[in-house]
Amino acid sequence: MLNLNDFMNTGIKNIINTAGRFYTDSRRGRSFMIRMASTLRSEAKMREQYEQQGIHIPPFLIASIASSCNLHCAGCYARANGGCSSGDVQGEMVVDDWQRVFTEASEIGVSFILLAGGEPLLRRDIIKLAAKYDNLFFPIFTNGTMIDDEYLKLFDEHRNLIPVLSIEGNEKETDKRRGSGVSKRIKMVAEELKGRGILYGTSITVTSVNKDKVADSRFVHNLKEQGCGLIFYVEYVPAEKGTEYLILNSQELKELQERISMLRVDKKNKGMIMLSFPGDEEAMGGCLAVGRGFFHINAGGGAEPCPFSPYSVMNLKKETILETLQSSFFKNVREISAAEVLNHKGGCTLFQCEDEVKQAVI
Image 1 (cartoon, rainbow, N blue to C red):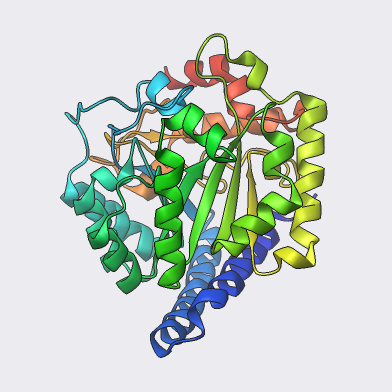
Image 2: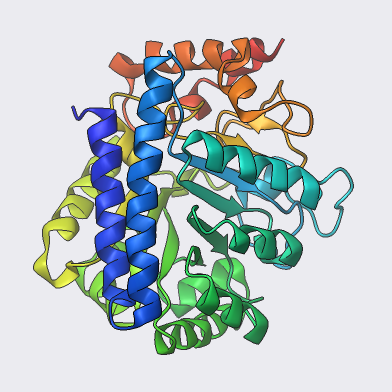
């Protein structure tokens, strides 16, 4: 079992090394890398200072900045749990709300804010706001279909914005879940990003059906050749009845983690980052949610333990990040998660403890 801080520091170092693949061949890129390397070290020291005061600051936040999406992907967890719709934006956080969140995050040592949705690129106002916080990295989890010339220019000029394109495997598998023609659109975007030397990633929902293909060395090497520098493997969480067969069983989870471990040390994949969610949590001694490694802010400002545990008491429209991290609700859910460490058999701990988390809301 690894030390959490050591794991995070290693991860940050890997991110810097990977970014170097893209940004060391130009003066602007080198300047960005030098500045961000210094900033990340300063933020780590800031977190250490809070730790000495008994306050644990996570290096990551997940922010679902949009509650709507332009696609209707089969088995979408965000849509199934009510966090995503076809156009209802009532109650969403406005620019001023997110500005307070981003400012506080940058002041207390948060290094990365993962932007999600819904489809986050529907909130062009928030993406432009994020671009101004050049001391923070913003991976943007997007279906890719809304990346136009304006967005490409923004990503090119603000390298702290990192598009992460969602795919399911090959063209057939991606289109089956996301809609006809989506895969071709994503490939076109990937070519544009590669042509401009922009670091981008892919996010892959891993199921019992596609697990062998997406964790295959040839598949990963092909992504690298297409300019991808970062892969998020996200284990499927059942969102709709009739999709239980897609869940990875204990043996499949073990095999997936073994494959990812092998991919990480494969010399062909040098310069790539591969993250597994929530698979890496087993090595971390338990769930990284509830502020241990991150927590989730929904589009309405609700502070949730995790996107897969969508329950909140605190709201970032009214409370601060520090108040949220020290809240009794987060403390209670962290205790629930910690109690399950010895019994954890893979998959999302808090999803499996849903009833206990619901009781903690009361």
